[in-house]
Image (cartoon, rainbow, N blue to C red; front, side, top):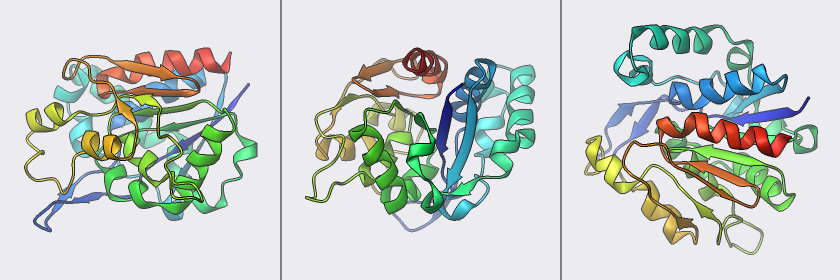
Length: 231
């Protein structure tokens, strides 16, 4: 049995370029799909957030449209509401990384608000990649990688081949013109190599110990790759 740390957002609002707030949180299936796969394989999960707040789920991610129909939407909602791990997180500042075997970061726009600038999260992700620990990150979750800055000011993930929610997908979702910054651009500026697949189609990149998924549809394939790393 492995122990997996889920690093999750505590933000329920995303600040747009004009200063207005957009309701957000984590995108449900980007946490739920890996959660179910890991639990089914017998692994243990701990959720950590900034300040230990209960991670807010983006209500848009619970809709039937976002989940391929009402039946699956109901299943996903049930996990977000009843899974003990999501209801009782620890604070990121209290994490001892040696207690874990892998790190997973779900997306949603929440990470762009808090994890992108969270020092405790950045330290965890820096130590994880340096130590060769499997790190899986999906959709907007790679915003958290932006805070993984080493002592000399370089990015711990610079030079890694990853994928993330793309500029094109952000435009198609209607958010690109409203955002303060776009994830694909910011990751590229930080020295990461962002590979782009078809919009909203499953696309996963694996580079050494880092596994990334482009969008919500990539959650399942990403979980499979993480399970392979865990053996």
